[in-house]
Amino acid sequence: MKYIVHLSRIFTGILFIISGFIKLNDPLGFSYKLEEYFSADVLNMEFLIPFALGISVIVVVFEVVLGVFLLIGYKPKFTVWSLLLMIIFFTFLTFYSAYFDKVKDCGCFGDALKLTPWESFSKDLILLALILILFVGIKYIKPIFTKLPTTVIALISFVVSLWFGYHVLMHLPSIDFRAYAIGKNIKEQMVIPEDAAKPVSEYTWTFNVNGEDQEFVTNGSYPKVDGEYVGVETEVIDEGYIPPIQDFTIEDNGEDKLDYFLQQDKLLIITSYVIQKAEKDGVGKLQAFTDKAISKGYTVIGITASGENDIIKLQEANDLKFKFYATDEKVVKTIVRSNPGVIILNKGTVVNKAHWNDFEDVEL
Figure (cartoon, rainbow, N blue to C red):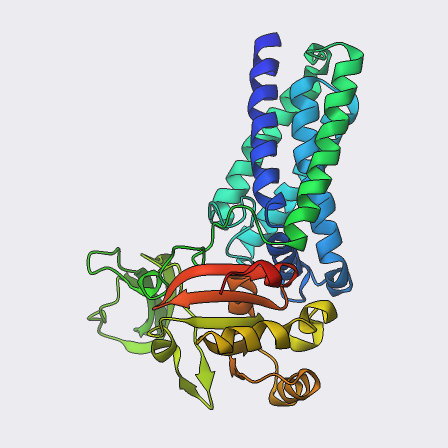
């Protein structure tokens, strides 16, 4: 039992640290996922949406710290009980998401690793089993150092986690796992290779045969049945290959101008998923920053999901000399974790991106 507990301790601790660090690298992205869970379509807890970012930071810091606590053996009872309560909550969340098909990706490993709802639930079941082993064998969890070093390491892990979370919120994620990372070509991220896996669907046809409804399952072809057609239900078995970028558009009065802008060799895009939620200090930097870019030969545009009235107010209040185009809110949130933010492209390839706090450091 002792060795099983040690193995469970190492595996659980490392997994919690990795999972927590990936989310701590992008707490804003995890907060968007929490908002999805809190929505009326999932848990119907919309009153928590305004607190999603705070909850996100607390959860991911706690996740990293608990992983460290477990590995060094700091306060075993507190650590194991906390891990147990956390994994019970996560297991419920992933089961609910999978069973009711509400959230397609749990966000357990941020954008670094996408898991289906059932994969996430399976992962949580394994962790639950490992933590139950730790719970039963808690007497075997001993500190690996003396009291003072153990306490110091525990405190350092907490302080460093908080600092790192604050740092990436005030700038951008230190590691960018998204399809809009520096060096990625947006056009290439939208292409479906010819040899890519195709979607697989299952069709359940219902026919009335001799006064009785009967079902016939096919892969899409219309079944040859001597009866009256009643209806058909479709279930996606395998979604096939899904390109990293699917829904990015730059719309101008219903016309998608994405291809045109991806051909520009010096394109600077100001992003603001919702103008009314943009940080005032960041908005105050837009005029000087974009005027400088225009003077250096950049094509400058803005993308937002906000309406025309909000755009006009922003432009007039800040004397902005560039045009905004319509884009899906979720896409803008994905491109840059900042409101406002900036991304610079050269013929569709991302050459730079920045948080509004770092506008002054962007080389033009």
